[in-house]
Length: 256
Length: 258
Ligand SMILES: Nc1ncnc2c1ncn2[C@@H]1O[C@H](COP(=O)(O)OP(=O)(O)O)[C@@H](O)[C@H]1O
Ligand SMILES: [Mg+2]
Image 1 (cartoon, each protein chain N blue to C red):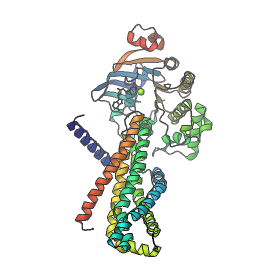
Image 2 (cartoon, rainbow over the protein chains, first blue to last red):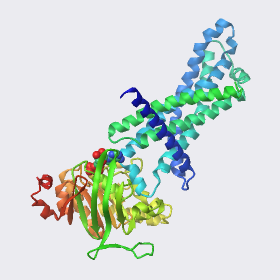
Image 3 (cartoon, rainbow over the protein chains, first blue to last red):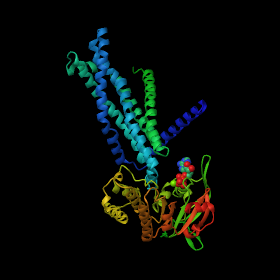
């Protein structure tokens, strides 16, 4: 494939994903909401991701604290350790790392699930059974990802802060209430809100890309594998792009 | 039976037989890959027609066009008196209720139990069926294929032949007037293939359905076909009874039998 062909492929893909997103919004407002499937997906996408998100969040907070301590000691501001870690986690690291792990776990599983449903004709079977497969499979999963990721991020932030508390206490002693006060002295609403809002977009992006890749999976088992794989790769890249756009917006709005 | 409700268009008749599926000048291609060039077919009421063709010849494309899963490029498809290319979603769904489709890969929903699989076609929003009726329909469908005991199992726990039977039960649960079979015996061993073919014949007699069967398993063709249509080069190459075609001199037809 030569250079111009690569670009043509790229723009074709962007166009197709945009079209898929548009279809998502059109179908969301059509009647017959699949509540049962939505709840089931919330359970799978949200609840079943908790252990992973909790574990990684805890380690992230702990490690970040231990890594930052020497530098802060050097500058003589060791007492600012909780505040710094708090801001780093809530504003940036928590949402982005959680979204990336989410893209790895949920993006790939949605891509593989819908992909195998496509190649084994289950999506066609739904259609001839009078159930709109786009509403039943895509809309429910995207909405569930969009609702559950922000919640997972908030929980992950909290667990990370707890990890950080442990990290602070590995050397020296800080009581939990003092730690908490130090974190929330610095943390403002303007730090939390943009992070919370962008996490909806992260969830939406991971969900829609996973669904797109699976829904249009090519025939054969290798097609399913490719769907799962590209869902993770594209989903992760898009998470970073959304992050980049979000920081520009908060910058312009003076929320920094 | 064709019901006489007023919204049914005049039925298509040919030589005084009622044609439940009429396909005229069907053309379909994917990009530069021309699959169907000019395909014509009539399926008459109560008849079993087998479409014989090599793999990749467009057999699945053909029946997916009939049920509206693929849109043809040109041509006319009439199913039970309705030109399915002109229908809106709800009207198309009304036709689909009367047409069962047995997918080549069975298309059982992996994440659902056998019961939920069978109930799936009954969840149409305009269908008002009580739980008692649903249970009865599920059990009747399972009885038909002799697998009542699998009702709470997951598809993954079933053998290939059992999956095919469950898929057949799901296809039959709404008592369709027409059944489309996409390679019903491909991938099964010889004994299971024969069982499935016999089951198809038995159920067709019981419910008096018309069927269009896609196959290249000659045992299955011999057991099920009233008439055989050979699909070569995207069109109807030859047609006749199994016995007539078996003794054909045509090289292209011989290759299916040798
Ligand atoms: N959705 C599709 N997109 C592009 N090409 C397709 C599609 N479905 C089928 N084809 C092509 O149409 C041809 C016939 O396929 P098919 O009807 O599945 O063959 P078979 O007779 O084995 O069932 C093949 O060359 C296949 O690649
Ligand atoms: Mg096929």
